[in-house]
Image (tube, rainbow, N blue to C red; front, side):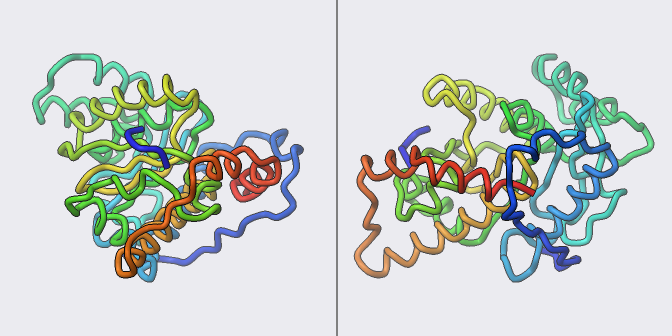
Length: 282
């Protein structure tokens, strides 16, 4: 990649459909409840204890409901055992207005998030709702998985920070995670973090002409931006594998990165683009 750009819970299968075809794009839109059920499945998959991606109340997920609203994890929920009442449905327009209303106190943020609820009886949305709003506004992005993988944080919390992720080691992480992550230095979670990401997302779009597949936040964690829930899960799993391999290379002299010309060739190959679509299909 170029520079600068757990709970336990159910273990529902998240099977990749190897019969992908362009006809998939003609399917009827999912209703809001079906989206919520799929979001619950994604959350449980991300929180599988053996994966070491989140524990306790770490991480959050979201999904576009397709009607000007989105589902996001409610504050205090745990991804590993989350159910319908662990999510809140909020208005895009309300979150947008809240972000544009100038400097806000913590009390004003909390009140604003409650006001953004479509159903006022639901629980307070996660403080990361602003981050999810911005990511779901990116072209073709419908599903977000924010996790704190042990492997990724071992690197992001080191003196090297995100720098080791700035280049590539093997083809599959190029296909799944993209050629450049969006890197954000540590900012306390909440509105301030969202504002920092908003600025960097705009610059990323200007530089690359497309949205990032993943965001790396210093001393914090990973955000996967997917067209489908399967893609959000696959990006997260591949980023975890990439981090584990990176850590292993430092025991044997350091990373042997692929040359930039090979990275570009892999990223633009017709067969790899087909495989990328196949892997993202439900």
